[in-house]
Image (cartoon, rainbow, N blue to C red):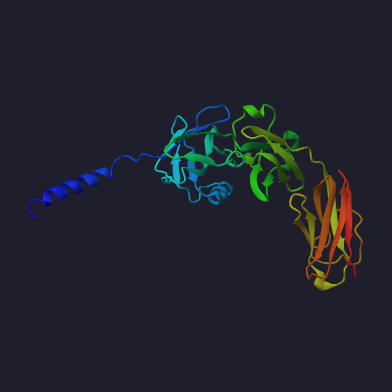
Length: 327
């Protein structure tokens, strides 16, 4: 018995050693990422998915969800994906999806620009061959651009002007700007917008601007707010129902379909009828409004009625509106 133990140990040791021999069928992916000028991109997140559902969810959310491999490209724009699950000999091949996620802080100093991880990433699966190095090259391009809003010095009296995108305040114009805008330093009147047609709104105390800009990705785009001419608007009511007051005067916001409350009538105009836009405390509410056509709503405080109408404001003119209960 004593003479057989070393032989058994030697056999066991040899068996253990054979287990650490390099796999014969290692599968790898060599990913190269370049920009639209074919320059390598460093710092791009590479995610590999073995599920189409995880891949599509990740692209939609803009961040990897349940990848089987995750790494970042080096300065040469390359990343070698190793340690992938071994492909069984019975399958020989396996489909995976390679997603890329990248935001550049160098395209415009002080701004982070998302690179396209949507349309470019929606591509067919990569078929991995068992025991091979699979070459994948992805070309990315900016998916966002910068938009600068400005007014010239003829609208200095309209300042400050507030600029909105999707109901969110994004900029405040506090000074006028003239020519050579592209040569000027990027400042807080410049914001990041997604590429394509984007809706915006600008608003001062008297004026409203609305528009759609077709944002060119990877470039700086400009929007000059047109001249705003001012008229005067006044509202009053002779409604004797005390519970109707205050009456809220609201203007339809074409930007989002909602209403802005701009004035409040606190009591009825008794014993007189206004003949112009001169304000009268609590009775006649008067305010400047940019020239143009508007939809307004007069809303009784007790909810008893809501009157909707249209007005056409003329420059240097008075538009006088009596709010009448429909009862």
